[in-house]
Amino acid sequence: MTNEIDHRGRTALVTGASSGIGAAFARTLAARGSTVVLVARREAELTRLATELHRAHGVATHVVVADLSAPDAAEQVAAAVADLGLEVDVLVNNAGFSAYGPFVAADPRRDRDMITVGTTAYVGLTHQFLPAMVARGDGVVVNVSSAGAFQALPYQLVYSATKAFVQAFTEGLWAENRGSGVRITAVCPAAVDTEYFQVLGGHEEAAFGRPISPDRVVEAALDAVDRDRMYTVVGLRWKVTVWSLRLFTRRRNALTYERLSRPRVRAAA
Ligand SMILES: NC(=O)c1ccc[n+]([C@@H]2O[C@H](COP(=O)([O-])OP(=O)(O)OC[C@H]3O[C@@H](n4cnc5c(N)ncnc54)[C@H](OP(=O)(O)O)[C@@H]3O)[C@@H](O)[C@H]2O)c1
Image (cartoon, rainbow, N blue to C red; front, side, top):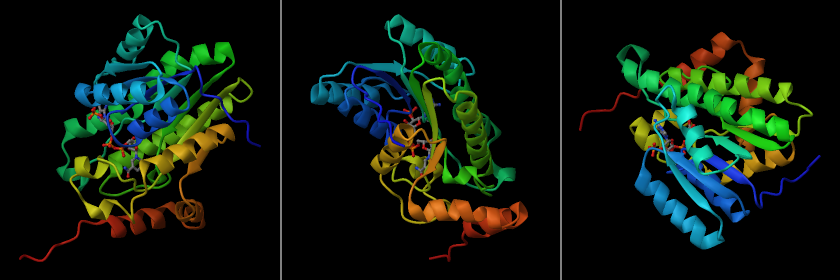
């Protein structure tokens, strides 16, 4: 059953709003009449987007510059929001990044930051804003997960482990808060056309097919919110793929994705 959320007059906080899926969430929510609070590290990109959205839609826009790899980032963001005199009605936990390559060659600090941005910040911001939503009996939390949350992704294994965390976290939250008036959804895309692959180092082995647009992810996520779905995998092909994982053993799935994403040896020129 669809029960559409009216975003007019709400306040939405979007992490990772300086590019990709986060910027697309901010654009759509502002177009639907939301005040938006844009969070990321790159102030210039956030300010440009805030100006664009205010001009295009006449909504209030705010920039909160924050490095979500800091362990106390959620408290800092919440303090900035309180200073602005705002209450968050819609929280989009989206900021995240991956790295490609074998675990034994990975930079431990990069992995630590990936875990902090991709799990600690999601939990921390949810702690900051969900209790007030529950008290008001109204609100939305969207956690950007991944089609990679449902099995190990060798060569991006810490990343896929963060998404498995986000998925389990979201499903538990959804179940705990049924009937509270707060909608909680995980959106699970496969490859999306964003800066993600540049940050990853341009490895096509990590993509598994043609990337979709960030707008498709946002559309699927907000549709899932309207339907009060616990999660949505974006695109029929990936819905079927994720569903079919349950037909095989976890061992088999790990080995399949190891083979599919193994670094390709390129012939010397
Ligand atoms: N693209 C895909 O194929 C794909 C597929 C499935 C899931 N996802 C997920 O979608 C989400 C958004 O990624 P995207 O594809 O839109 O990639 P993107 O274009 O690279 O955007 C990543 C966003 O995260 C922010 N971010 C990264 N590190 C941060 C930090 N330490 N502190 C604050 N913000 C930080 C970046 O902002 P700053 O650099 O300005 O800080 C940027 O706004 C991520 O959770 C990603 O895992 C992506």
